[in-house]
Image (cartoon, rainbow, N blue to C red; front, side, top):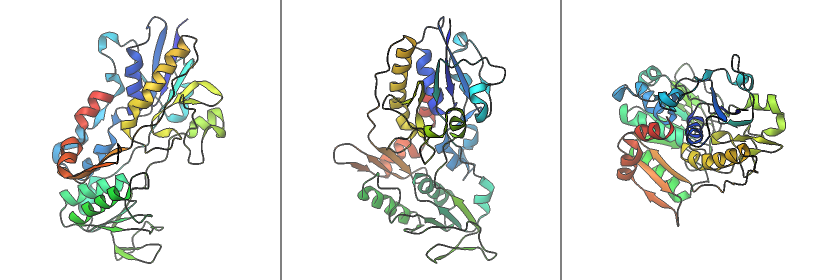
Length: 344
């Protein structure tokens, strides 16, 4: 009897693991079913520049679809596009979950025209998304006032050392971006005269306010299917070191949705997938899942427009690199060619 491997989510994690499994399974005994609510998938880091400028027409370069996973000669079935809540019972597709892999993300919608027209902009959240969007706006709309309001004294969060966070703060200053730390914005609607007031009472000119505090895991349907206890308080999926869900040995999770103490980045996906692929193959062979995820070093490149940025490599004492390296590795191309080769 053919065993189905059901992959729920067609983003980078879902596409990557489908590609990995497709090269290792016996197609006469196993079938991969990829269920996604998006077609094509979007390379999210590129959306910040695409929302800021028409240069490079990134809106046409930043998409990839699950149909590209296998060469046509090896493609046995098409995929189905469904809403997330339907994913475990996809209409029209006889899905029997011998092994299920969940990997879901949330998009970041932005409108280019609003950024172009705004006289002054406030970004609420000084994590990587807020930092990179500020860098894009300051580069392509020079002179436009940009303020980042962040709950911590320094950009990003304590997962990164203060010396790296201060280096990023210096980058903001270089590009004319104002940083307001240890403060919050509670009312996101500017007043009629184009101002907002922070929780600490600071008045900032802003006729456009953009929240850049990160997305919410798209995991509600998992709790509906398996019970609320499968999710943490932050709505991330609880997993064992094998990346299996507790009490559900044939269900795995990887990518941004898992409840793991690390920064959520596409760069973590290959390490997650390596564990999941080994364990899925073990289950298909009626063996126990024994491969365990040990975590990954924190590595990040924060772009500040296409020609600048700051890089942190979490090896040894922690290596910090500046604009030339950051631009060569990510800022110039946003890693679109590499991402398509890896995940598309």
